[in-house]
Image (cartoon, rainbow, N blue to C red; front, side, top):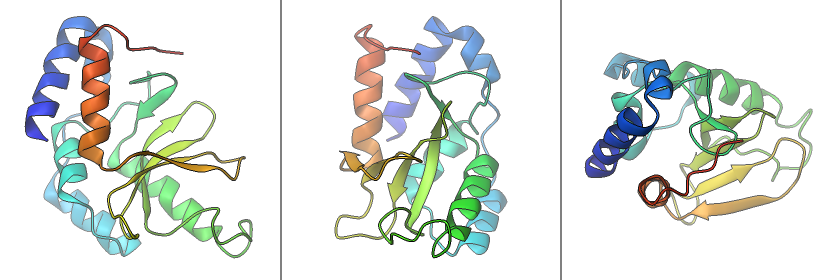
Length: 159
């Protein structure tokens, strides 16, 4: 995971310096502990590593139309979505408390890591207004590997 983060860091500094400048400094262990205390989930090591590198940006997309969001923005979104279970979200498959968002589209959709499932660590594409919940990668490391390969091959698309 660390090698992928290092490669992404280098690529962003070289090819998207204005975006790189918007990325916040990585977060502390205390921020992770607070997240876990407030949500009742244990953040996986790979997600901690990603947020330890940088704490997101809300100014520009990292890929397509998705921003890499901060720990605080993830917490806020998660608490809001968790609070909608059983009221706004009558379908138990709409949102799961074990999902942790780490990106957000300009339209309010998220990529989330599934903390507890038959296959923990899967990356779920959560659309706020559509019931489809596609697994886009088996793990965060696999997802990041694909993103880094896309960057390095010159195929990164931004909306």
